[in-house]
Each structure stands twice: as C-alpha cells, then as structure tokens.
Image (cartoon, rainbow, N blue to C red):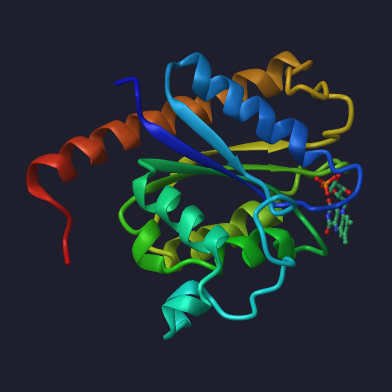
Length: 197
Ligand SMILES: Cc1cc2nc3c(=O)[nH]c(=O)nc-3n(C[C@H](O)[C@H](O)[C@H](O)COP(=O)(O)O)c2cc1C
C-alpha cells in the first residue's frame, strides 16, 4: 500500500545533533516508497520545548496555540509513526518526551510505531529503545517488533540523510518495511470496522 501518512519524531534538539541526519534518512526512505512523511522536529515545533500544559489539559480553546492544534491534526491523520531517538543518561531524551507529551494519547491510539535508536557509543542507544516501548504503549501505540540500533552514529549519515553504511541501511529498511506493513493492515481494518472505543 502506498500513500500512507507517516510522522517521524526526532528526539534531539541539541546543537550539532546527529539525529536530524537519521530522521532525514527515514523520511527519505518513506517518500521513496510513495508515502507522505514529515519530520516532527522539537526545534521547529513551536513553544519553548517545555510541557507547560498538554493540549488535552487545556480547558480554554483560546489558550491552545496554533502550533499545537496543527501538530495534533497531523498526529490524528497519520497512519503510523517512527521514533528516531538517542539515549541520554540511560534514558529517553527530554526532546522526545517533551514533544510527544504535548498531545493527547487519543491522537496516537491504535497506530503502529517503529523504533530507531542511536548513540555515538558502541551500544547504539539500546536502553532508550527498551524504555521507549512502555512510553509508546502508554500513548496507545503499537510498537513494532524490529528495532534499528545504530552504534557510532557519527559518520554513518550525510547531512541530507543519505545512509553511508550498508548494514545500517539494511536495518533501517527492515524497520520501515515492517511499520509500513502494520500501517497498511491497521488502516485497512480501521477503515472497514472502525477502532475500539
Ligand atoms: C545529555 C547527554 C547524555 C548522554 N547519555 C548517553 C548515554 O546514556 N548512552 C550513550 O550511549 N550515549 C549517551 N550520550 C551520547 C550520545 O549518544 C551522542 O551525543 C548522540 O550523538 C546524541 O544524539 P544527538 O546528537 O542527536 O543529540 C549522551 C549525550 C548527551 C548530550
């Protein structure tokens, strides 16, 4: 199935971040498969990166900034997500949780989500990959089984998101293909039978 809508959440706002290259690569791979794909970048999202009040806690509609409403619509419309996250101090980076926490679990619910993690060290951010599963589950998403773990991420991607390492490229493709499969299956099911309340 082509023509699905994907969002790629980037979990770094750091100066000189490696993650932008990885996320660009994922977006490019999805577009090459004729899907719509957009990066949700904590640097350009809007707001100041802190969760002052999540959208679903705001009682006064005039208190909801435009960037929140617009991004929430994108999340609602998306068929699937892919998380691209580093590991910060054995945990998830605040740029990831601080972005995703802004929006209601109802907007993410019943959607598949692929996991791509990376680090500059030898373990590829694998602890972040383990920790992100319950987080995605709490948001109502189905995290897909394959994970792309990228150790020594520096030098593996060009600035425009070209993957320079064959093995990493193969592993990324496996995640993209699998999320695409789940997105296609779940979208078909949701279109015919709706989703559970
Ligand atoms: C605050 C901070 C904490 C980090 N903690 C870890 C860690 O626990 N494990 C690890 O493998 N790398 C860790 N690193 C190194 C990151 O793997 C490396 O900086 C990576 O490039 C971060 O992703 P980014 O460049 O997209 O921000 C940490 C880096 C930062 C900035």
